[in-house]
Length: 217
Image (cartoon, rainbow, N blue to C red):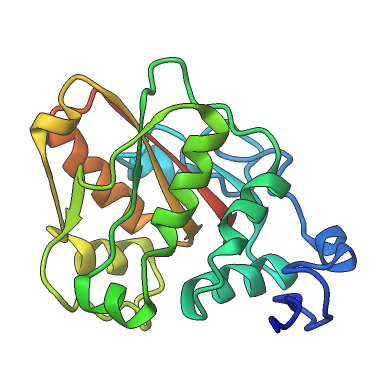
């Protein structure tokens, strides 16, 4: 007999995210920079003006805190894959730009993917594709190497940018002439998303936007 699901945040039996925890999830709304989606009184923040990102625009569903953070971590490290579709449902409308016609998940190193039993970004990308009706291609972008760099100690955009430089490879046959929406679980310094976007644009993508479940403020 299968056990009932438990809330990824508080542990209450019954749902993957209970109603009380859903109500505590803080939407990432308000005045924000359209490029990095950090809080900003201006449409483009000073950081993005001085150090432009390869990502044209980022949008995120929630602030990376509380139940949203707990749900992302459960999806990533405990392989609670049912949370992917649930998080997309709770996030509400996802409106890609008109020139975007392809969804691409951020890939993770192969060894990490095997240890986790999958890639959380791929699960989320499937749910986003189902929501938007756009095509999904998980092979358009790949991660170089098996292990991937250690990023835990790199907190700034500059530090993370150095670590992930050259981390991706894109297939021009799959992305040339197409607008891409990158999908990932959480954005922090934006370095990973920006490097992935730079790689896709170098392979011929006409524009690269990004969507994540959560944004670390």
